[in-house]
Image (cartoon, rainbow, N blue to C red; front, side, top):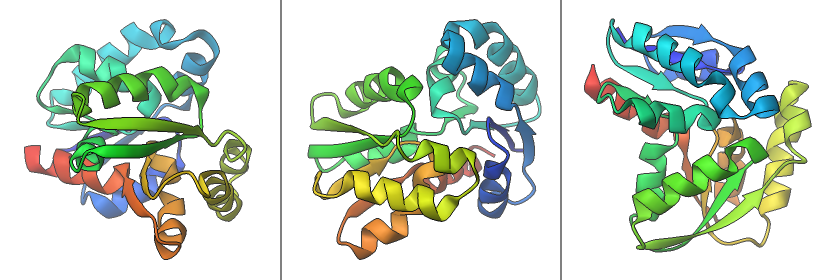
Length: 194
């Protein structure tokens, strides 16, 4: 059985469509605490939860803030949400616009980028923090529009580094951007382990 660990309820529908029959565990409290106190504050709880879930099969952690904790466990059955799409984005080299909405994901995202790119590509980080209040309010159209506004003129190869940001992909593609999103790539990666 594939399990998904989410820190927002909205991801259940997204990943439910991408992964048939997955078990979904939603723990919004983990992201809230990590944003407030840093990921060290949730390290033990996340490790225990992932260890328990992986007993039943592969696990996808859909929260990029928690990504470094997934890597720390070094378990081949665990998939970090942003790794597969990042590998695709850096494949051609050059500059990649790396878009995030939460400051709490900045270090984890850039460290993963450096690891994955191994000097083949450079990251131009864009913080779309004005978009996040729309996400929290459940206004996905305004969330997507604000991400698109923040990325206007930033560069044509864009990695939407958080799963929630994938809603902006179609609009960006229509505007001529080459867009990489984390949900599809991560779902394919975890299905391959099943």
